[in-house]
Length: 78
Length: 217
Image (tube, rainbow over all chains, first blue to last red; front, side, top):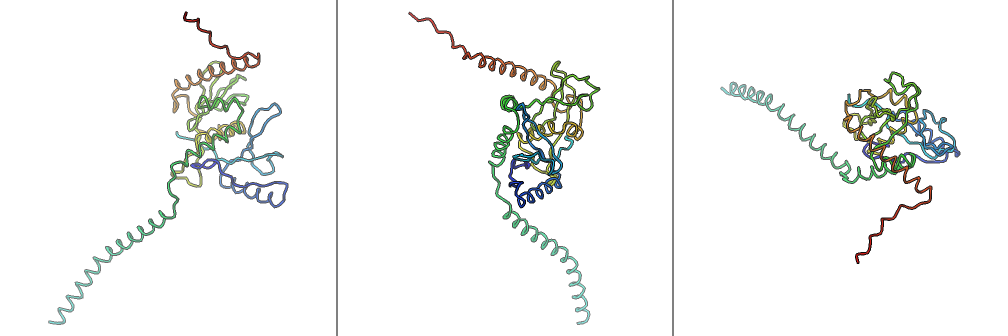
């Protein structure tokens, strides 16, 4: 999610392919270094939609279709 | 005589030089700046009036694909999301709710409001933003639906972290409590109607047709 633009595709690939995985890891780190938070939308066994914040590429659950990056939260107007 | 004239001329030229040099510098600087600004204006993309609208449409699709069907319908119909709190002691700043269920109302670009659904009592406002840190000054905002989705994901993923990053206030600091109470009432009405429709569907009954008007003759 990019302010002013909304959703933008940053990178895509198959983590099972070494070349893609390397690129995805690199992009993941770059986004986190830029101060973004990473979230993975998930669905529980009961069908309820949830989200998980991940801090490392290895924390992404297997089979995840997408990781959403959004700007880090900060205290708003005081 | 000639020597005196030459000396005078030299002094006049020196004085003129002193006066004109700063003026020349300023003129050349302004010219350079204008040239640079023209070049930047040519490089910058033209203003696209539909960009934000398209961004919001994409954001709505993304939100719809992430949240529950009920939550999406709630946002579509009421313009807000209710997210149930998951902390045992209640939200930060609370004096311990003793396990009483609490929830948050999530609005686009407004503080998150914590409240007790059973009584409708407002607990706190949590002011939180998602600023673009690569452009700290005058950065654009997330589209409305992206802002709601970011809050939803952060609350679902790490409620305590989001609340700790926010600025906490008593209710009424930024959001009018009367409007929040009205929204809680609207949400209740909306849920009752939705439940009634679901029951009707489950019982297999179609909505009752309007009563036939008696014949005029």
